[in-house]
Length: 271
Length: 319
Image (cartoon, one colour):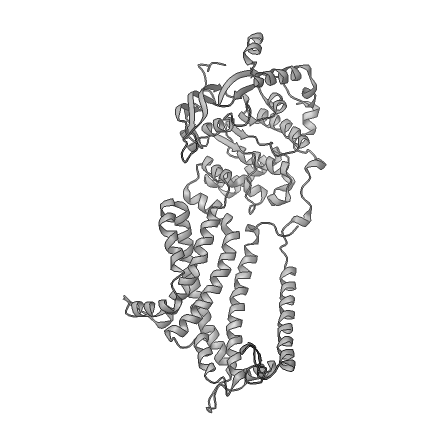
């Protein structure tokens, strides 16, 4: 794990975080996360990977302050997660694009700006700029129902970027897309992350997606959910060729082994 | 940036695997559909008239009985006047008095009166229903406390309610406002209309999925912002059918309330008045019936216009 430097605050800092969902009516309580310590350095692209039920989405929701921890602290950009949410320090995208069907594409991207009182002309300019970034300038006036799933997801990414956040949180945003679309959007996300210099925290259950995108892959296990290993990837500038490089395959193997529970062995060899 | 990424930059072409849905699944917004619907409606009116006349041709003047119970109506002119008789009756004077105006004027005036009262009731009912829906969606306690009473309210028979409203409100004086009989009728209409609105609003306001609600939370949007930007627009597909039910309930409520409170001037009262002459002037009763039907159509048409105006808030039809 990389220690937080003395300079600018880490983008995300979790220490001793537990999350317990209380049981009741015959259901046992669920220990979704136990003892999570994790630091995400500013500018990094970090993915959470693990089996279903390992609490990776819960971890993201804790960072987003959509839910609170049962124990421990969550800090975002050096302040409590709640303050970071109120200050709009992050943008978020979910597996479902979650666009408002009654708004045009450009008005969907404008939504967060509208909520924060940007005037009409300024938010329109900003939204069009972002649509250009995600390659959907021609669809500004279209309704979401007229777009494909991949295009809707790109609108959702543009919307998450609207307020110019330093941190982008993504919960399996490409999970519902076909493989071809998925790979293309991964390339685009890598480019967008570089161009906007945003920190990205990305939840996935695809090993190749995690390795391709990440500077670091946080490997998690379930029952109870916890972080088992952090794999450093850093494949440098990513292109389509990256997917066929030996380094890529080596890292895919490393993450796969970590998921199978032989994490410590590999981590030791790396150091 | 290398070439491979550049190619996939802003100008990236859309791959076939991720093509947008074909245009046929797009919303049908044109007036073409409305015109076609109107055409079908006109055809159905003609068909009903034809069936009416056909039955008069073949049916027995004494009706049909099965084991002493009449199952088919009498087909004689006193029970079922000819369609053209009814239409012609519209043009003839209401009574034998010298200054009597044609029936059509009386019917239209009564329809206009009841229309205004029913609209006032509908408006009140919609407001109350929406408000209840909003409160019940926001506060779980309110839902548990209010919903049983909302449901219970509809089990009170209208006939029992009418004298209560008249008796209670009739003595009401709020400043300059003196209670008029039509207000009692509007209140009763509202009493019937609020129910579908409250239930529809509650379901509709709850319809946004969890991720949409969380998205608004992530924007640290206020309750008011998420109500106006997310919940209300998302509720429209539930509110329009609710409004259709509420409008029908308001009309039925207004007509029945006019009768049971003895309020003069509306179509409900007119049906009763004309019915007294049913044996001597059967066509006249039907003019009042047609007036009531026209009132229903008018209101249904208004709801359809609103539906059309809000079509962008509603899911894609067809495909």
